[in-house]
Image 1 (spheres, rainbow, N blue to C red):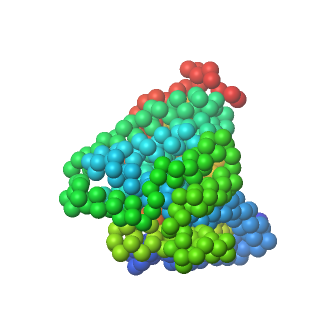
Image 2: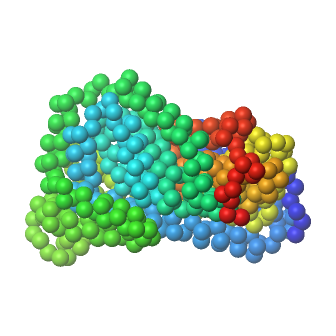
Image 3: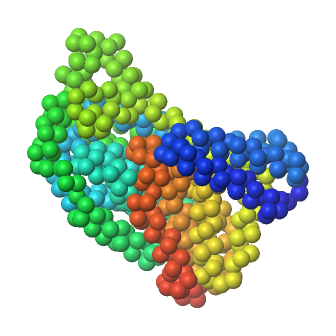
Length: 482
């Protein structure tokens, strides 16, 4: 097996970028519903052919690389499918309708966006998981925001900005711990050092959301409109604080570091129990007026698989609550799978490593080193399609360089988080982008321009690196765990 050249390594990436660009132009928001999956698989095919016929990489090695990449993403794909059932059962139990109901009662349109961002940040800090945050409170906030008349991309941007800020700053977060471990930085030293770049990013984001909320509140949303929506929700569901039990169960389990899959499963089970107790009239209506365990089983299965079918004859309410189900997540799973096939092929042929190594050769000083680290994280999020690889590979690759430049390890760990963690959600075929798009029901390219925090984090980090602001040298630091 010969080492691939940079020129040939860039051919599959360029080919993929061209196809993805064409898909966006031709299919627009529908690009991720099939065309992008085909583009990723064609990109993998081109990569495999170049690796085999040009550099002698056996198809068995390529197949092994694909298997390893897809197996690494398998848990995310399973969780995504199960969350489809979670959404459906949470609507059946009245959980999501109650969240929307109380949200409409308590949150005014002018402050909705910054409040949503702050609420998601608090939940994400306490659980250490941006995915759990967007998959629970995020679903309700999407509904509230749409009822208030905001664009779905703007709402999702506020939710994701808060969720990823909390994830990044939480000592319970897996990516936060991973970045610290890759750079051999003590965890709380890493978190403290991130404040310098993360703090300005979230403050600017909140300011932007506040300005947008105050200056562009939908004019057609009046107290009468909100009252009409809450009355319809109250008529269709038994609105009660007891319907908040399922999300409390999930958040408590996640907070206790219970794995996501059993936590979500228990969230589904608790939702079914709550539905049987508090939504009996709704269940009887869906069962045809006569209760039986067979009919109940069929309703729960239908909602879990196909989503919740609401016919309130009110367009806004029906659009908000006709969602969920495992079937609705299959396109997203397909996208993640296709992305992993491309990333696995690129890594198995050695092309990914060659591109990464060429980036390192361009480093000439502290600013360019940090810029190269940030760029590598973004590149890997776009090619390997996984935020963990976008932390691990640059972490391994640049660790020695940071040491050679006499830089403390928290500079590296911060750069890994500033780009590796937060930019994954901006890329449609990355597991982060595909997951959040599937859960929130908003195309990635629709919400990406409004993810102010996720966009600002790497930009501020690059600026600080170039200007040598908050850059700590090894001689100033005594916190390394190396």
